[in-house]
Length: 459
Image (cartoon, rainbow, N blue to C red; front, side, top):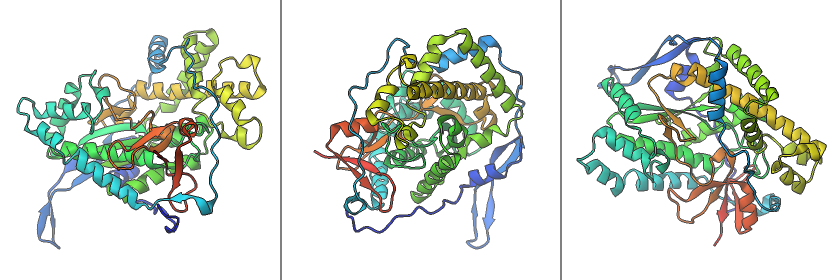
């Protein structure tokens, strides 16, 4: 690490072919992939690119969900024990950014080195070779094994039989010589709870890059099993959720574009595409009407005391998602006071700020749940990409869970370089307060960056 490195600026990322096709698709339509045969007069060679056309979206029921469906699915959406309040311990020390002239800097070449090592140790490795040589498994079985085991996949997939969803998608794609698609709603923006991250919502750190790299690596590993590879469609919920959590929409858009820029920088344009969830919802007529209906129904349920324990758990979790940084910046509360407020559940006996945070958390939770339930009721992702395997950050039957690199996902925490030797397990994401408590980790910046790229754990 050297403080003499030059300032690093991310260049705007050119869109992938899929992203361009999606951006140009008319309202009420979806993309149809087709492998074509074309001739390049310059090289005198034939080649077979994927071209995109548009077709009308499958018919979508605009009927509002029944009260019974809403109660059942709201209860399944909100997980957690209402009687168990997580205890995060004593107040951590606040983060104090070092002066510019004494910051620890690192060159962006570290990112390339990290990806190179991860590709070598995860894809071009004897563990993959052993899986390829296993004659007891079908090709579909090998893909299931790949998704269920580290260092490529995650053991979180083991309890759920992925055979049906993998077989169906692989055979459909194989018949058309197309990549297997995974669709993943994720990567909203950096959490603005100051105990999870010290960075603005637009900031992308080593944690996000490590997870993008892992998705890319999964696609490369699948290519060892399936001739036509795989690709990820990340549906960023940045713009859709920003207003709910008190984030400026411009910040959310910048976060999404920085993801694309890093994706391009690491040459992952063929394996990782990034779309916008808010844009996707506008393609289905009636989405807003169903969403408004569900919001009204959830408000009625909350006021009536129906599933009160689920609403309580939801609001408790949302306290750690909404933007509480302004309370510190405007001097409305102290660092210690804010820490204590986020862990309590009885605002009626506390301060006006605590009551305000509780109200914001309840409202954010209700609208977040309504948006998710509307997506589920209308089957939004399947309507837009019917052949894609649904991927998730919350393991469940019928969906493929993605690896969690550390204690949490990168948008909910801060990157920690836990090992000096780069590799698949080197970059982890943890809540900032745990890093601050440890007191033996130092912030490391890319030159010219506004927030740490990662914290380096010292021995």
